[in-house]
Length: 71
Image 1 (cartoon, rainbow, N blue to C red):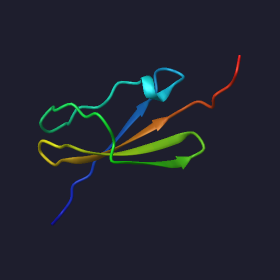
Image 2 (cartoon, helix red, strand yellow):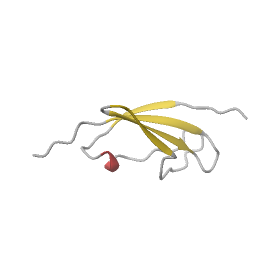
Image 3 (cartoon, rainbow, N blue to C red):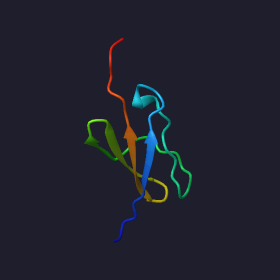
Image 4 (cartoon, helix red, strand yellow):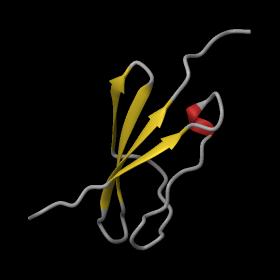
């Protein structure tokens, strides 16, 4: 079984990455609620593995986050 993967890059719009918009499948446009896996790529980059429950398409997103600072 072969697998397809696409890397989509995004930048978190708010200080809290959990507040960013969740992706939709680029193939069937179904909404996605939770990533299958996540990994720290570097100090300020997190990647997420997404697989569509409807069509099975898989892709990876990378998010740049700023370090949290108390003000």
